[in-house]
Image (cartoon, rainbow, N blue to C red; front, side, top):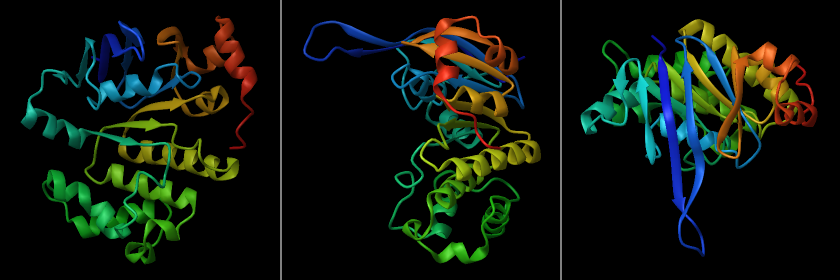
Length: 257
């Protein structure tokens, strides 16, 4: 059975300055296999981030269903969601706004354990040091504040925080789009290494087809809230069927990885 199953997701918001609703996600269904990376691509406003937030139940769908490893996410109560939060984490686009500027790195990385409790057998302080090493930072970072780091280093801290509770599923919401191209390439390669080390399942959101081609196993293309093309990443990127997919490919440069 697929690890993540989303069926017929719909999200509507009240229309501004008018009666009725605006449908930002329209009947989207997708699956993610355990250990794979599914790329979700589209231009700004296509609905891809809203889909991701519905999978994590950060946004409640208007209609549809979400299951993660057989668990009905939308039917889960408070205790059920508390357990699911350990298994599902997110890395956001802006590496600075995602970090509390008043907290040192040690506090930032330990915060998930304070909220959800440390997994059985984990020694949080040891885990923090291990994760910093794995994302390419040393222990001297522990007592520093976010503003003391570069954008790429901040995103590495965000990734370490997302991994603190040993999750199985990560939503990566355009995690390198705010970074310089060379730094973005380093972070993308780090994500690949971490996936192999931990057996992670990724939903990778991007507007860059070349980046998705490099990182992802499969790709789903969204346009105006609808899923317009889905398939193996190499096949979709090298032989796109839809004109919209072809436009996305033509609009983004290659990533120097």
